[in-house]
Amino acid sequence: MDIVVSGIRPTGKLHLGNYFGALKSFVRMQETNNCFFFIADYHSLTTHPTPADLHGNVKNVLVEFLASGLDPEKSTIYIQSDLPEVAELYLLLNMNAYIGELERCTSFKEKIRQNPQNVNAGLLTYPTLMASDIIIHKAQKVPVGKDQEQHLEMTRTFANRFNRLYKVDYFPEPVAYTFDEELVKIPGLDGSLKMSKSDSENNAIFLADDPAVIRKKVMRAVTDTGPVDPGKPKSQPVENLFSLLKTLSTPDIYSHFEEEYSKGTIRYGDMKKQLAEDIIRFNEPFRNRINQLSADNDYLKKTVKLGAEKAHESALKTIREVREIIGFKEF
Ligand code: ADP
Ligand code: TRP
Image 1 (cartoon, rainbow, N blue to C red):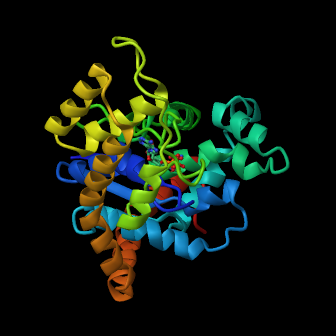
Image 2 (cartoon, helix red, strand yellow):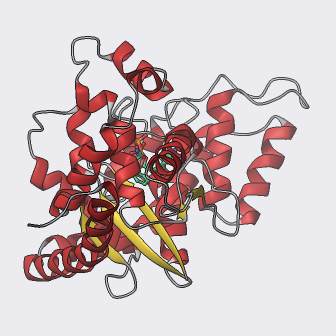
């Protein structure tokens, strides 16, 4: 069984994009891999150093992991900050990570552009922390979206550099992992290409949203004034609605609206009503499990403890070996 590691930052509730772009495939890959899925709370501090409710955010993501079908018996589900070995490996990797390569990282450049008043060292060394998350378990495969490719490339650089510097063949080279099929990218309701929690409030449908909220968000989704010439490409906001319909409705319904569009008789209001009901139907079991799990603190506590124990075992072995390779010795 291959070792798989992936993490999600607890910066808000999880939305349909997170589900279709990550969680759904996590759930399936736990059957055939040795998976480690964690909540990257240290990472969230790089951009949100004083979160209003760090614990609440971590709890939300944990509950949503479990509600989506991640199974604490099959996978190791844990919280990053429960693993001090990660912080130690991060420190050690930072000794061999060069300022120049960290400064060239696209996501660093993007984040300091967005937030020039908070250019902190944690942000600069985000890639070494992420590399530590991955190589602490000697992972071979990392399921992440395209936007994380560069971080993964840097992880390979750090792992290879460690092997070269200390003349060992210790860390494997982790590669991006797409399970079975191409990941589905979910667009936003505001016309943007990607559903994201950081954009406008009405861009994302959260797994925990109730029917009234879903109806409201979908009915407010951006469209255009109506079909232009048949054969001409759809405008982006309308393309987005079709793409959501394709993922969440039946093929019949999807082709019905495609046909209406090409005949020029489509009524976006009808299509949105349909889409809202299909999203509600899809979300219902999630919402029920989220409500149930959120109220079950005993179960959550047990799950976190079990995850921390399993993750520790794997991380401690690596950190002991790394210390020995570098030359730390007991007296
Ligand atoms: P957000 O953009 O809402 O902050 P994150 O960057 O925290 O989301 O994403 C967590 C995971 O979910 C990543 O693996 C990412 O690739 C995936 N993901 C996020 N948004 C989408 C989307 N709209 N479509 C598909 N996958 C997504
Ligand atoms: N950087 C990832 C993201 O923003 C989250 C993350 C942190 C991660 N550590 C990781 C993903 C290790 C995979 C493996 O989505």
